[in-house]
Image 1 (cartoon, rainbow, N blue to C red):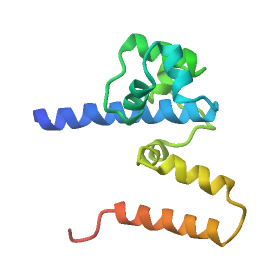
Image 2: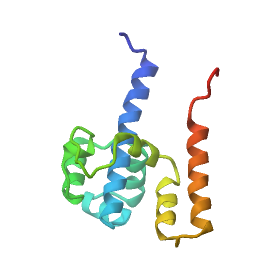
Image 3: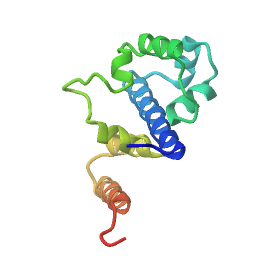
Length: 136
């Protein structure tokens, strides 16, 4: 199968976004700020934001430094190693959506209430909107 240059770029961008999502998820699970990670990597917090969005590619040496700072392996950050407790790749794809982690955090801290149910309903509706529609 021959990939066009556009297809190849899309594949690469997807890898960068997936790695960024894993960096962000791991950083957040450790309660680490972007500034803290940036300091450990020797970059600005804005650069960490770009890594996490997949806007900038993480170099090999920075990926190794990130794995140490995030107390994980390079293999896990690039998606080659899985853990039973880790979410499936679809979850990381969903978490790459802007605002997804904030919505998840809001759901976690909102007491069981109508507001929490409304937030869950909103998330479900957003997920349905992203699904391909039959016949389109």
